[in-house]
Length: 300
Image 1 (cartoon, rainbow, N blue to C red):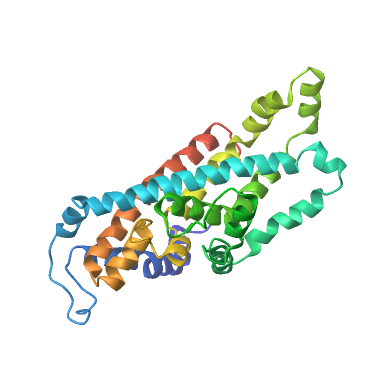
Image 2: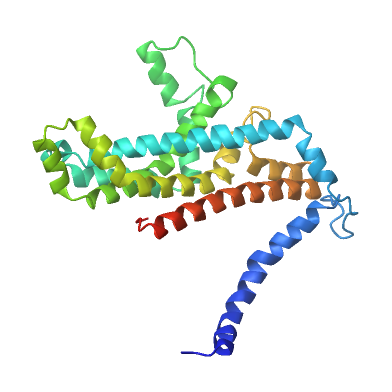
């Protein structure tokens, strides 16, 4: 066995790397959040204001609207939609009907197309499809008689969040579905056959066999998707620019707006610190779940 000194010396470069690329930016951002630094005085820096930025943040009605958009619309609705559709898609791809039709491989290849599409390209395509003047979706709905006039999906308060959820789901659903499908592939076929022999209905098979088997994967995908979605900037900013107005403004876009449009770097850093704290809470939850399942022999 190696001596403690040798182990410490071997790990020192890794600790230095982590300190430079993770610890220092965190400490810098926390320190910056305690100042009134603006974009126009970066050279001189700002004055120390203590917790004034956080007090303003937590007393602002706009912040709670941004927090609601982030937690409810972007994260809760977005992740829930992907999980439910991912489960349905995985069960469909794993069904005997698809296997008998000899199209399982084709469907698995097709489902990779949205995932392989870069988010920027996906956003451009969907913005064109949802356009009120030349969008194919409006043309289809008008031709079918479902609407009397075109809908500005990305410019109307009633439609903009559902449209955003559709775009995000289309681009990221394949990962969720394929993760569930991979877990289903590890389920012993004998369990399903035994349940069928005992007279279990398809819904009972799903409830008592598939879902318990998928539970570890569902937990991991929910938590990981929460991390990815909560911090998402690209989809919201490139699709709506946080509009109409600031109706779809979320915490990630709020950081950008306060820093590079309003020029308030100190306040923007405070928003970033709050985001980090919220994600830290999710991280603690994730680690507790992983630790508990490992302690009781669960498989993640």
